[in-house]
Image (cartoon, rainbow, N blue to C red; front, side, top):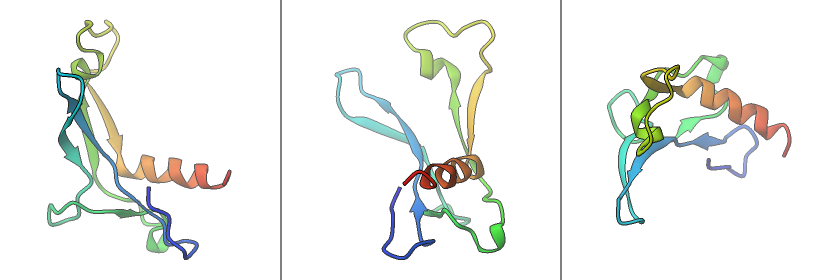
Length: 95
């Protein structure tokens, strides 16, 4: 997350990637993008409190690899940009 000098101007970036098997490095798989498909920082406080559209989807077997997925695990972990934004707002209340 990037906090600006001006209260209310905070932005965030979210993404996920895979670690290389050699123990370092990361291959970025998916990240926050704007409506044009360009990497973007998203606003924490949106004008009119309009919900953010978009999400990241991580295949569950990649989370548990090399172990098998639990039987009750969903096929994907879906992180909506709006849910991330709301969690950040909640966390900022403690700062």
